[in-house]
Image (cartoon, rainbow, N blue to C red):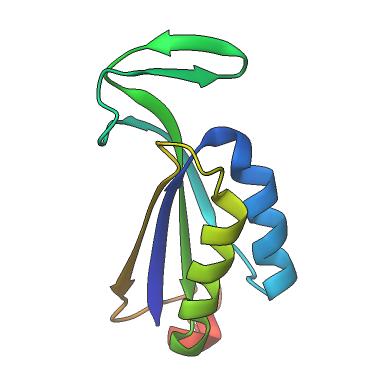
Length: 112
């Protein structure tokens, strides 16, 4: 199993979610976060207002999927979150050692 973590611009969340649902992703975790990258301190337009800050609002998406689906999940996120502007975000892929569904006790791929 793989854990795909994507940090994207907030207004791209619906588009990414729809693309992942179409791909067959059954669930994801979404968190509102703040951070900075190469644009540190630069102004950015967020919800129609221009901000000059060193911490930019972002959305973190976490998806656990089968190994065979991970490359496609990364590709779909990259395509649907891309605006071509600075601050589009990053995608990280990590190995997952074990997953357990709390309610049923199912493990690994069955728990997804």
